[in-house]
Length: 401
Ligand SMILES: NC(=O)c1ccc[n+]([C@@H]2O[C@H](COP(=O)([O-])OP(=O)(O)OC[C@H]3O[C@@H](n4cnc5c(N)ncnc54)[C@H](O)[C@@H]3O)[C@@H](O)[C@H]2O)c1
Image (cartoon, rainbow, N blue to C red; front, side, top):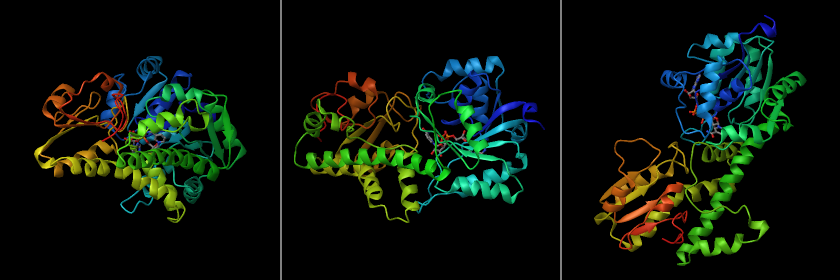
């Protein structure tokens, strides 16, 4: 089949997810014929009905436009891959209970779609992968007799900001072949002219190092926060003094819960890749994951928690998001389910029948922890007879516990 005979220019495997859907929508809005292949039938139905199943700024009208134009089709039948010239795979490598990468999931998916690969196709890996996976992908496809172009073009957008960042950030492109680089570059040039070409192993490590760098920066801030707090000093006095008109500390982050589906996992991937000789990464993980425990330890010194109700404001892993994956709010909840009399939870973006409104949570709780810095919490008033824990300093009264 000649390249031009394909029904679709692009097929996005895992295309109903947080990474895949915005990308598919953007290409469809750039006049590409796009198919989505996903195993989640519910999300396929939701997207087909014109609804983005999660919070993604600006994506809703673009989805409607893509569907109305006929440029975007969805299927849970893998045969759609056979009708597509470029296959973008967004199946990641999570870590297992030993904090080692689970490459088997991607391998299984690749083997299951291998029957639809032909040598004129371009396969692009898009999710964050364990270093070396792009090379192994080439090996696995060659075992099945396929010699198509293979590229690794990592996603580096901030979840929720895909529509803006897919066109404003540079795109890293890597492949083993010149035609792979050229074809992948041509595709992403529909979104940005800023293309950075490196080798596949360099691209894999670039993506991991980017995420790990952010995770370590959050850990530094969290460590400084606990040091200050233990000495009864409000870290925001220090943070403000450090960052005020001082360019070299401009990107120093605020302390707070560093969570979500990527940063922890990717730090552990780099740890596994360095044969666990990655003290900086493992220490960052202990600090960030230890912050909920630190909150509890500090409160336990001040109160008899077993007699008190603790309210957690914000269950999403980050502000203005409905994504609860790997949210440290749930770790907080588990800790206080054991320590406190009762735990109440609330989040304006996360739907859960067990949650209560912010007003009810504040009324019924003795201790209120602002776990996610949703902007609308800035408007809240917490009565002075209640203990507010505000590590993010969203209320502007400092972050001291
Ligand atoms: N969320 C982010 O901001 C972000 C950013 C950069 C990289 N990543 C990486 O991208 C990967 C995907 O993340 P996500 O947030 O989009 O996940 P997600 O869970 O939102 O989406 C994954 C999608 O893939 C589908 N899927 C799973 N197995 C499949 C299969 N065998 N065949 C077809 N579809 C399948 C799921 O149904 C789901 O719709 C992760 O590895 C993550 O590390 C995520």
